[in-house]
Length: 298
Image (cartoon, rainbow, N blue to C red; front, side, top):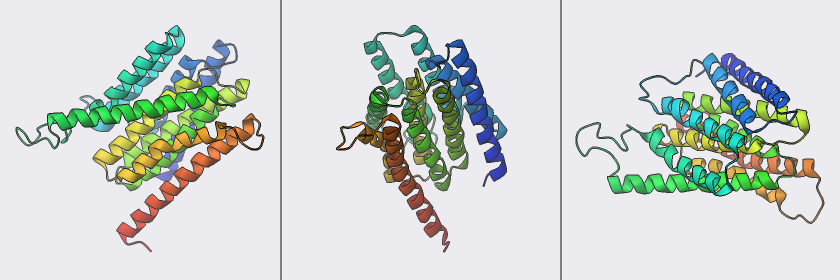
């Protein structure tokens, strides 16, 4: 098990570095962090925090987490930063989101026993037809949740609430993946969650709003999906836990629906965070119970 003090140190570095870079970006953006500032802040916080834990991409990228940190995360950070800078037409943004969603699973699973003939010709666990069917299904699922979270972010009364719901979910997915037997995969999630929190805190402090928060949403959704994928395919994360965690941020939409009583924007944000926290907390608690039961504890 990882050293708890080192994990806390990594989390502190991730939050502080992300907040610091976000604050500088906010000054350059006249007090309101834009998408490129969010991407830069989350990237800096994540990689500096992971460096404390000696988790970094390595070449050649033979392992899934190396491809996550060396290809997937940098790509989504770059896509969100460039998209914020050039502001392409919405249809192009949607197509880029779809293409990125379809590419994540093949990159993470590249060279694995599922798709590669590691034990000789025809030894891959998935046939070519099954392989592309699974990749398409995973890609469309990621695209659907990503689009849903962007929709929630646009309707949100308090912009930083949407990235925070994703950070909360990723933070819950971290120990869940660790309990599935993939410690470093869970640590990546904890540090990424800390970096998102740092960027969101800076945005809220600077303006009370979150122009560019969609960048945090994109990075958060892709990061959550990637974490759950490596926990499921390379650890022992159960499918039911992975599915519930992946869908749980969408519960924040309930707080944005018409309600029989009035809530101000902070109240709606708090309600959305509470709903997501309840779902995530139940999944983590159930994962801990199953881990204890399997280990014969208690």
